[in-house]
Length: 106
Image (cartoon, rainbow, N blue to C red):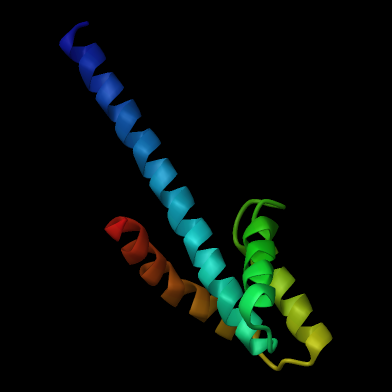
């Protein structure tokens, strides 16, 4: 391999690593958000864990975070929980930092 090939492979490896890290952070954030939402809905224990998994899975429906927000908003509305979309998004942003710290420690 030439020096150029080595650099190209290094960039590809770094990109792959960064993408995997971002995927793990996003999934962790969604799980934490799901656990928070479960508590707002009065769920605990296995019900809360199951709900958090449903929130994580909802992120695979469409690109971006809107699918997660829509799921939680619909569940809150059905349960009569008064939470604004803005508050949910703000909490999601806060949990992004927490999730990144947790994943980086692993």
